[in-house]
Image (cartoon, rainbow, N blue to C red; front, side, top):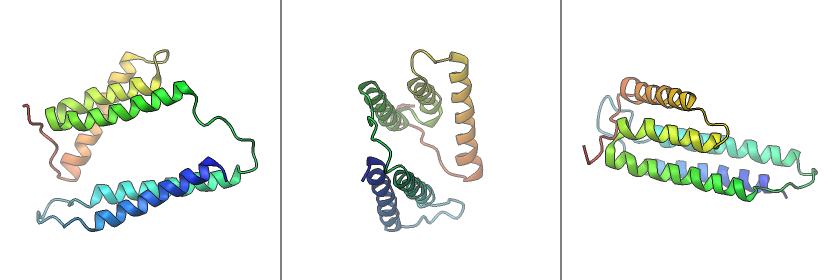
Length: 152
């Protein structure tokens, strides 16, 4: 069995497990709030669907010669991306959504693009459009509160 099949099955299982854990979270008492279940269920559904897709793709390519999963440089970039996500969580707690999101989105773009392909204006535009889209989604459409941070 290829790594894609194991990865797909594991990802789908994490999605199912996350949905089961989310079901145990008590519902919100706010009338206009979508509650604590909306985003976790959405994320779990995406994990499940992507996991199934990866497993099916792995089944189709089971007879193809195995490739190197990740080269050392790619492992380094993956570690950087995980660090960016962890720092974003800490930044949301410290400085809030309005400062952390544009900055960390630009850092995320830079980590994905790599040093040779980075464009400052594209990164800034990507960060601002992503910030605006998330703000509209959570504040205006979902009427949800955004993290304000403890420092400001």
